[in-house]
Structure formats: C-alpha cells, structure tokens
Length: 422
Image (cartoon, rainbow, N blue to C red; front, side):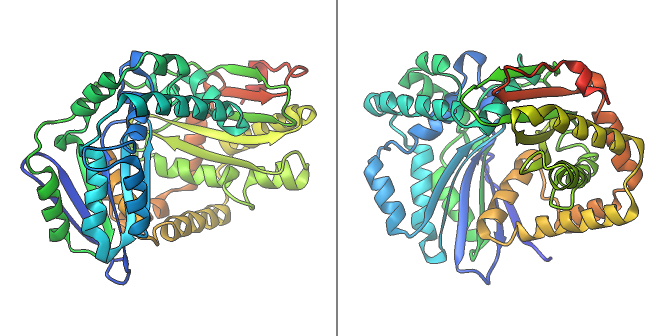
C-alpha cells in the first residue's frame, strides 16, 4: 500500500500534511487543534466543546445561514468534533472546490465573533445535548464509568461539561481561550484526495502565514484510577447497561497492538468468545463487545453489554469466566491468526476514503509526532504472539483494578467487588 505523504512545517510552527490519492475526485481537508477537553481548566469544563459550537454561529465574513448555504452550494460535507485530546473542523468536497472549501473552514477557525445573542442560544443547545446524553442509556453508562474510574481527572469529565460549568462561562471567556489555544504552533492542517501538496502549503500560508504563537495547553498528568462499582438507577429502562473494565496500556505503548488483538478475541465480532458464550450459547444479550479506549498516556479496556435485570448476574459471571480463561491460557494459533486477519482487514477497509485518510494523517501527527506507515502497523500486528496476549490480560485484569458500572432498573441488583474476582 504505497502512500504519497508529504509534510511541511511553516515558519510559525503550523504543520501541513497531505496524502495524494489521484484516483479520487474528492478532497477531504481539516484544521486540527492539538487541544481538547483534558487541557481545559477544571473550572471551565466544556469550554473547548462550546467553542466548537460557536465557530459555526457567525464569523466576521459570514452569518450562520451563509455558512450553511455555502456548504450546500459546494456539495460538501462540513463536520467538526471535540474530544478529550483534540478538536477538528473538516470538509469533504470535489477536488475542484478545494480553495473555496478551505476558505470556509479557515474562516470558522480564524474569524468567529462570539456574539452574545448566539452565545446564550448555543449554551441552551449544549445543555439539551447533555440532557440527551442522560436519556441515552449507553452514553450515560459510558460517562458514568469514566467519571467513576477517573473522578479527579479531566479524562473523567464529559467533553460537553455540565450545566453548572457552562452557566459560569461568558463570551469573553470563550474568546480568550480560543485566542490562546487556536495558534499556529498547535494547529495541523491535513488533507487527502486528489490534490497537490504544494497547493495545500500555499493555502496554509495565505490564511495562516501571518499568525504567530504556540497554543496554550496546560500539562495534564496521567490520571490516577480509582476502580469502583457504580450502580445508577434509571427505573424507566427495560435493560441494564453494563460496562466492565480496567486501565490498559496507552496508544503510545507498544503493547497496544496486543491489547487490540485481545479485544477482538474477547468481543470483537460474531466469532468472539463473549459473543459465542453470552449470546449464542446462553442468550443473555443481543450484543456484547470489548474494545480499548486509548489516550496518549493511558487507556481503558472496556466490555459493554445490555440485558434484562434478572440476567445481569449470570452475564457478569460468564464474562468474568472468559476473562479468567484469557489470563489462564494463551489463545490458540488458529484463533490468533483469524483475529489478526480480521484486525488487518478492518484497518485497511477503514482507510478507503479520503476523509478517513485525512483523519489518520492528523491523528498520527498529533499523537505520534510522525506518520506510522501501514506496513509498520501490519508488521506489528503480525508480530503479536499468543503469549503477549495472555501477558497483557494478566496485567490488565487484576481484581483490584477492575471497575464496573450498571445503569438501569437496578433496584434488585446488589453487586460488590466480589463479582470482579479474576
């Protein structure tokens, strides 16, 4: 898989990285910020996400309606997100519209006006977004799990903040934080598709060349996990949402390849151990999955399922039995080989669009500081041994490290740490 990747760093520190895919007619380009919710002051929880919303609410050159109309006129797809460790603004368009599309997303990032009127409306929109999460069982379970595991860390907080933290923000707070964070030294411009690298460099110089400064990112230390059993009543729900997990190696750890293989073996598909035992053999849940959630300095290995209240205990008992089995004996060579092929196919198939390739460029630049060639990733997957999978299982699944969250009709459920014996 030959990749035509080029990288340029402008004198002001802004990074431009592109991948040419000349068989396509599309281009995906994005402006990525090396800062997310874990870099916010604790008292301003949710400010990064709030800024993301406000950048679509008018600039010095465009009204909110003009932003929407121009996106449709380009036939493009405009998107944005804020996560714990970064934020991004991107657009996917026909290659002929690249200059106009880049002008649009650049205007959002460099020219917001943070009007008082739009600020108050958007704060209410975000509060409704938070309430929507409260009414979405799996989202609520995830937020509860992470808050319980890392109660004193920014990683344990919702990216959206809380109604209380948002109430304390003012337009000037957003403006000051935006000015300090959205600076060239902490911006990556990524693009993939039918383009020329020099074209993207020229566009970056045109719109950002006069800007100076490095972004403000307070150092966030690795969070201290406090594994807990959290039972949260939501009596109107028919099912109980269950998340079971523990801290695991970070994305930057070489062990994360073995962690990924273990996740696929345990709960990564219809041939996974948990799917076959929990669903196919015992009929305890419609679906059960295992996946690592990885950050730059830590991670969480999480197992998620939903089931009726009376089935929660047997589901947990079977899941813990599979965890003990994973710790007690390495997977067979046949199981390991099958899992590796699934992991390779998932990676390759997930990179067959310009938007996925653009996102991959930016994430690797931000998290690794370099582009990790596909051949290197595939080689690392190939090198994972059955013994390494068993070893990471033993390191992760320790009784004192296990955390459990249950959300739903839990009035008759009485679980303590004894059920997490592994």
